[in-house]
Length: 541
Image (cartoon, rainbow, N blue to C red; front, side, top):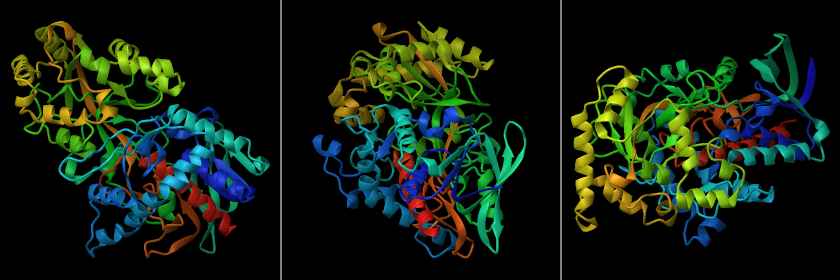
């Protein structure tokens, strides 16, 4: 039996930020994580490191005029919160409150706080989730950490290790928390077992913060909560979440009266491929799909009539793929397109940014990321390469062990698209070409988007086809909390001694994003929520 003022369950960014706040308040902290010490930082360590911020120095230097009012209008548009007085509408009250809080507080309590810790952002914010059938980000707000999520995690961990009250912090790795302990209706600690020895343990504290991530690392649970809009979950569903984000602590919270909401709201991606060197079952990578590639269905037909193009509405991409007879897809491109536009989300496959090599970063932008393209072609089992279209289609079918992809479909899609380009920009009447033109008007996208590149151009080859699957990523729902991160019960009252932060809490309130995220608000939500939870816990102990 051991004791601390506060126990934090989960060593991701939310847990780390909560620990920093608690040490600032001179509280004793026991931070418990199921993973190994070298993975301290959780999924954030592996992330791209994009953070949603509003009205920042980076935006102003780039000539972007932003405001809290504009950002909140965009957020509420994309979220699609229920405004009715039904149970669902009441369930959206705390998520809506958290959305307003994040927009108004993220620049100071996330962006400025990180800068004070030594974090720097790439000069040009990215413009993602612009919206398709409803408005999304009106301006670029996706601020990339220079060094990816790895530098973000290492910087905050270093801040913990150098903290003047470091002696008040105990770190315990390889510990699986399974239950919450209680006395007289209040949460008083946790119980579980050591992952290696199997030895049980109990820890006592004045309060407990749950920061264990979402449920999306548990593929069976993802299937169980699959959103009705997406029909039946795909037969092959890749895992892009943390292997221990399995919902164990969600169940523990529910067992002590805490309320779980909106578990069917998830932020999955449509362009997942198998990891070349998997570290968990169904380990997937999330591609940033080239905008100049053609998105084809399982037979090789171009998906339409509205073509699929990334950067506008990620949820719509998943919805459209899930509506197909077979819930996987192909992207058709050539090497020229891949060199300029292909990217993989996360720190692992972005070494120039991760290691802050400015010359390498500029080389990849200006000359194309040859290392990435060659690595994926050589090592990823979902990449197919050929010099001619018939050879490419034959290899696509060989991958699947059938003849599902039809040469005539692929040829018709490529030739029709190329013919539209050949008519000249004043006569471009293809929606994908119109969107490419819009993308290229923003200088951040112009650097990474081809200028109307034909697929079958003779000198742009070889041809590349990428087989893509839905990849499980983030939980948008979770443990319901108030604005102080206190866990709420089914009557809407705080569960004494229990708080939740980060993805475990749906990034705030049990689902502050609603149905869709404007991106960058995952890391940002973990930072803000973790800091609030730490300050709230300090006030309870």
